[in-house]
Length: 384
Image (cartoon, rainbow, N blue to C red):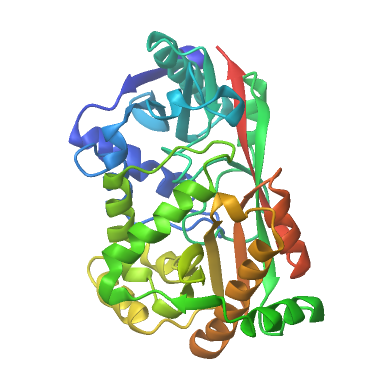
């Protein structure tokens, strides 16, 4: 019964623990859920640790029934997102919700109603979600691809949630796709010819990142990203503090031969970031590095052998987008990393994404290398 459900704000350390712990119970029997490291989730929701809170504010809620935690949700708004053009996805009056988990639909409806009320109280007239907490974290609700685990930094949720979200009056605003591809064999001949042509072009240089200059390289890559993605739906620029934070978090799983920077006439104009699928190592740890998980993870990170590589980010400076050169640079970076991933890491599979449903350039590249959509995430929209 809805009237037996209590929704209350997260206020104490015990509340935050209950918020983080709930999915471990709800997904205990789901073989495709990957337990996140609890310390990482605590860091995400702690203002003193996550620089997103420098321009955003959030309220976490717990749902209880008969004294037992049965659901959770975040309601939040991003002051940088509020300054974006409305037609670009965010914009004035747009608040968000995310990190939603619920034992049943009655719990969900009570949670979403409370999150919407918090947004109204903040002057918002539109609700867009789920985002956990931002477009750069885990955006969208998984609606297809439940039969295999997500890769690193991608979400997983109950198949039941889609119907519950839509019953609450939400309509799809944007689909985000991930693409699956085999990387053991060379790409189609036309792609090989494009790559070979680029290798003969003295103006083009595709280089590895230099981890000894990691902070400088990270700032360079994320600077290209902010320019390349500036017109994308949902884009919110990363601040300097967020760039430093992301760089620090990624450094342990960054390998020089898995990140490429493309230079044309000596100018960095594109990049491709590839991460070994950390979820393959995290899944057996159950969300904790204690007592021996940290040793296992460090051993894995020293020289990972991993089936899957994920391409979470690619970018080409805006002035070159839609040009043949942009596509050529993308194919070259993909191919160079494919070679190293198979030989040095034993990888046989790649995953690209997420990619916006209207990003025709990236979708054309994904099609050209014969990859197929394996998961779809949807961000939903509702007027308040």
